[in-house]
Amino acid sequence: MAAPAIEADAVVIGAGPVGLFQVFQLGLQEVKAHVIDALPYPGGQCMELYPDKPIYDIPGTPVTTGRGLTQSLLQQIAPFQAQMHFSQLVESVTRLEDGRLHLITDAGNAFVTKALFVAAGVGAFVARKPAVPELEAFEGRQVHYPHDSTLPEGTLQDTHVVVLGGDESAIVAALDAANPNALARSPASVTLIHRRDVFVGEPGTLQQLEAARAAGRIKVLAAQLTGCDIQDSRLTALRLLTADGIERSVSTDHVMVRLGVSPKMGPIVDWGWALERKQVPVNTETFQSELPGIFAVGDINFYPGKRKLILSGFHEATLAAFAAMAFISPEKKVLLQYTTTSPRLHQLLGVGIQEKK
Image (cartoon, rainbow, N blue to C red; front, top):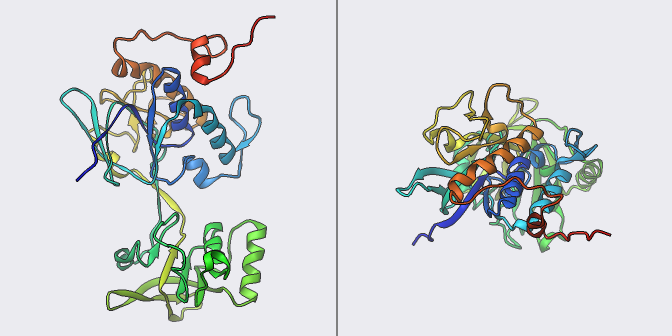
């Protein structure tokens, strides 16, 4: 039996910087938001693509990083207690008779909201899959993606583990699997497969990989995945074409896929609106789309003169929050207040008002 729909005044799709700032602006309007994101953590593109690279164009912040910006925004929205719903995509949006919006995610969760804010950036970031469709049947059992919760302690004991990928996350996955002290699991073998014997990671991580290779705890193969072997409904081996053109197979009980992520528009293209260059056209007075009560902010939207900057998204989120009050609380008179002087905003933010001396 499906759980009842979560009723909300506002739902934000996307937990990147603009989505998080949308939560802040809604909070200043005394609106508590629910946030949905395909990733298992906040930060969006900033955290997924450049968590530790410098960002220089955030006002009042000479330099930060994707990770630092995300942490600052999370601290900023903490007083508003937004509820986060990670690792899920919104599959459908329909309008109810009373005008509210009904959302269903691929995790089976349902939401009913008065206003919807799409801050999905360039799309939902989803894990890249190997170009071997047969492996999909083993996902969650023998084929595992980042943040997979299907690997309880001891699962890898005495098994053959293959890790696919060449970046930091792939190296860490291989090191964790090969570490005999990690969760008391010691596999029979760990093989790291990448198209080239060249890896990208922090210097310390690369040093650990070299040490594990020298000790024989991790075997590295420069090869492309071409297929798999299945026996008695179990995945038993991966078929490879090595860099020198030799076909071979590697026994496997578990495959850890660490091939990075890619943005996908997903079901958003079928929500009944006309897209412009895979973006949502908006009214720049309100940043509402052609669908009443649905706003688009950040890189997902389009209008003449649009610039894909975090700064621009912050501006868009501010105007969208004001405009959305016509749907959330149409009876409420919306006033422009300043966080510097407003006692009510100070109360919402949980900060004290300094007494005049």
